[in-house]
Image 1 (cartoon, one colour):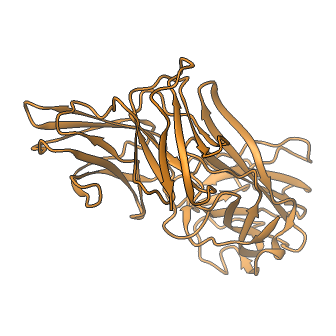
Image 2: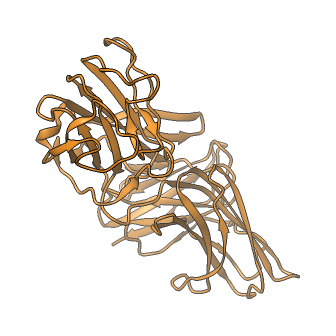
Length: 380
């Protein structure tokens, strides 16, 4: 089902780079069709001098595929917004697909979870006249790029869109163009303002040196797009966090480290705040080091906060790649299964879609045996 969406939080504007998007060539129409990133214009288009400057063939299909994003919307929904230029919005069409990307011990699994079906641009937008180089002053005026422009904003509703700590989502948008003019794609949104950044935290650990009163905080990231820096925050009570320093982003996947000095001998907690180029931000999970602990790995399972609301963090010993967790109801029904990141000490668990009540979390350490007894927690 499709409904009007909320699309005021742009995650990729393409003003300075392609943001990790790609456009695979599609064969079978009158010619090889695909979008190309046009750095001078700051968007994607099928006009590519000197190779594509003459009248494009029709009909043609072009796809644009995003990198994985965390879904900032509730389970079962996904907002998609974008800016377009096409010649005839009442004839030219588009289709949106939501593709899940889930990390498992066996590898990465992808699956198409929802599709908008083929839609006319004019159904989901209010087109306005566009004439390249006239309506808007632009560099490198593009011949055969005129007609109408507008902003599509659509919400896909499907129960197969299931949020989880190991699952992100790619957005695939297809243009089905039936007129012999060029087209453009720009400004992808996947939801409201203050949406999570396109960075995927996949591990966070801390090691304390008792003699030097320092803690080395290390974290890994997966997808990392337009992130400016990582801010390391420390707390002694679990509610008030203070920034201890920052590390610049490396514009690629990798491992980061920060050494925190003059750490008190009491229990401390850490989290990482990723800040993007537009000052939007996202937090990692929280790790805890007890006063006498030399690392953040727990000898037993601890859950916090309790009572919980939307998310919990599970503190545990270092787990191997075959480990898994499960959230069960009081009558034994498995409501959620989580695959922890190998080597991590803390695992975030989303409780989205689980009603208020009492639940149990169980951990299989990967050997087929339970790791400690089930831990009870309450969701408000």
